[in-house]
Image 1: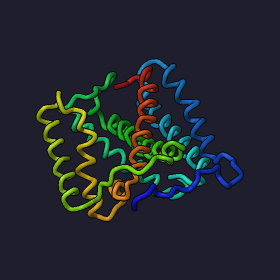
Image 2: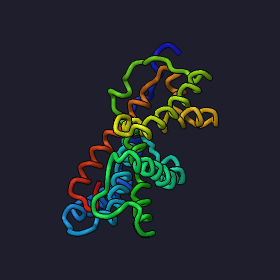
Image 3: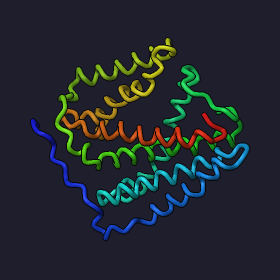
Image 4: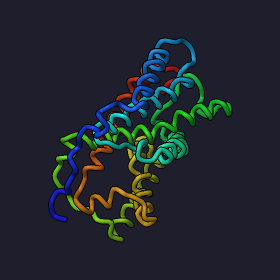
Length: 243
């Protein structure tokens, strides 16, 4: 492929532009949990973080549905729920790495506390993947993302896959040995390790798209992370416990 990959025009949903029920459910959760999380005293965020972010996930998913006629939740509800189940153990991995990195700390109570604390934390961590992937799909509907031209070709050749895999392990070793210098590599190292494995297993990967010079999914993912990052930090400001 030498030109820009064709992208279907994003239009309002063909279902009469009626907002789905989970849009209103998401907004209701945000409307209730946001002021409670900021307004109540004492330890309240361990109870309110999960429903607040479920509200975010549902609202974002509904906006995606409105813009393109389908969404993660409406296309496959079981896989959407699976994102919550996969997200918690995935984020616990970053928490374990952070024991060495100390990129963030939690104020209010210890991370590894009672079984109830671990359950509450796991519920909170379960919202990361649905939020990020939902926001990324929403970003993918933005006109400027859809209109991005072709980028450099990065194909999944054996040398490239091997290089990514080794680079991921080198980055992981570097950040664990010199955390004060290489702490930022924590986000890239895991991706570089898993991307070649996912390709070998036949799963969907970003490198399949870059082999077609299509970098829009990567840009959309970056923008989705920024959207989530904004709300993570904003809602965290008056939370307690907090990071």
